[in-house]
Amino acid sequence: MCGIFAYLGPKNTASEMVIEGLKRLEYRGYDSWGIASKTEQGIEIHKEVGKIGEIKPTDLNLSSSNLAIGHSRWATHGGVNKRNAHPHFSENKEIVLVHNGIFENYLEIKNHLKKIGHNFVSETDTEVIAHLIEEYSKVHTFEESVHLATKEIEGRYAIVVISKEENKIIAARKGSPLIIGVGNDPNEYYIASDIPAFLPYTKKVIYLDDNQMVTLTNEELKFIDFEKEQEIEKRIIEIDWDIESAEKGAFPHFMIKEIMEQKDTLSRAINQEQDDIKKVAKEIEKAERIYLVGCGTAGKVCMVGEYLFAKIPKIKVNFAFGSELQNFKEFITKKTLLICVSQSGETADTLEAIEIAKEKGAKVVSIVNVESSTMARASDIVLPIKAGPEKAVASTKATTSQLAILTMLAHACNGGIQNGKQLLINTASQINDMLNPRYEEYIHNLAEEIKDVESMYIIGRGSNYPIALEAAIKLQEVSYIHAEGFAAGELKHGPIALISENTPVITLAPNDELRKEIISNATEIKARGGYIIGISPTNHEVFDFWIRVPDVGHSSPIVNIIPIQILAYQLAVLRKNNPDMPRNLAKSVTVK
Ligand code: AGP
Image (cartoon, rainbow, N blue to C red; front, side, top):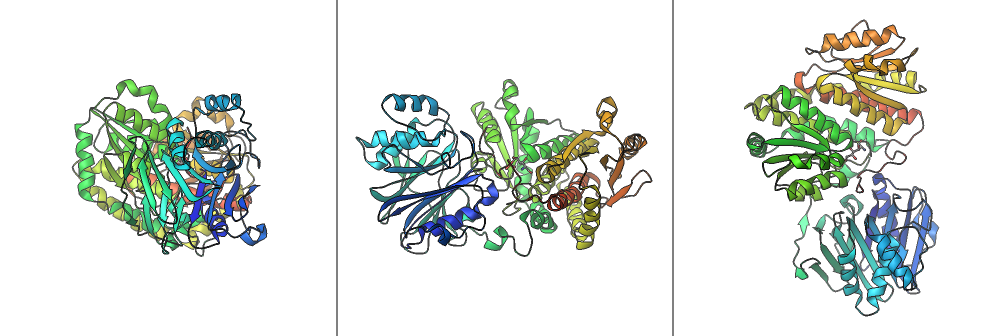
């Protein structure tokens, strides 16, 4: 969601570096941005509404500085305007702060501060933190004041604070990521909410964990655990990400780059530590009740998992969206297993589900892309999907890798991990053949044909019903066309009334035992004027447009979503939308 970037070091181009860093965080989604630089004259703040885009730091006439903090904001408290954009000053303009996450008890504290004379210029929860720190600083040092404030703030947050009087950055984290990049020059540091922001400068990182605070100065790097009130040591870790994987390269957008990367990512997902898969399979066998939990696209992957487990090892697993698990908490005990699926590992709703499970003593497994994420750290077992950085807001390669891991897990629970692996190796090689420019061109023709429709629908059965739902998310997110997915059998119970002349209906029709039924549903739609787009290994006369996919048995959800990802992308481009940064959306949803 919001992005944070800060620099402290020997270079006097801190402001420029912060602007460039924020540009590398653009993919997270934001609606305004701002930076604060410490200069010889004091603290300079610059805020804007809209995207950083092509702005060159030199256009902004910024003074030279070796300490600056920046933020890209996705509005939660208060509208999108300069006043609400970060950084925020304290009342006396001595303290400046950026903040990710939500400060839940801010109103209570704001009211108290108002009573003792504070005036607020924005509607944000963030500004209250700056004022709270100022209050403490009347009798405490800067560091102590931030520490005391962190203990008062309830919610999930990451804050980065500077003061007019001191050449230091203080940052604290509780539930929202912050990573320190250790620069190549002595005493040179970066802080960001996501590694790609400082990847061009360093691969040496220190992960800040929950309840930890760091003070960075030109002389030292000091960590404390602000709950336990003690100083702690942290390790520098060398990451193996390369800058190319986090950049677009020759592709016009991250979304298409990431769709095309599925030629490789699936194979990487399959090459899991087999022992870890077996370990999770054992936990599944032992558990009295299993919940698959995720949100949005990851939630649809979990729904596919429910079908795969019913079909392959014949095990009942329950699906719940992260935000809904609280309604079932009575059923969670220490014999429950929670399997969480997430790309970012930072989705607040899924993290809340983990908290509920942990409180009840349940075991947690996460299937996650960002291995350093809060979710991975909170889990008992992690199955990393190894898809590499996914920057487009619309999830593509992470989705198919998560599906692959669940497929393998379902086979492992049936004693046949090798069967699962073989099936997926075959699927990966067929995807490699499928993803070529001719295929893209073919789908482009369809996109041209339907780009002006008002609504479209997607139908599926069995494990492809959740894929119909996921297809709708993909189309909505980037094309902004009204799209809805249905269980094909449900159409006749209501939604078929929506079909009129030439309404496009994507029909997911793998060569399985449900094919006959879904073809007959497509025929019913066609009889009412619908335009049938068949995604299937074999053509059928009911299809007005046929998109061929390989015949891969239980892996059909994996191959069926890929042409829809391409279609959604092409519709977005034809309709002049930015597929990487859809309106109103953010890459990782760190608010409830
Ligand atoms: C995916 O296209 C969506 N942008 C969104 O639904 C996403 O899947 C959801 O917010 C969950 O994110 P996560 O995988 O990072 O937990």
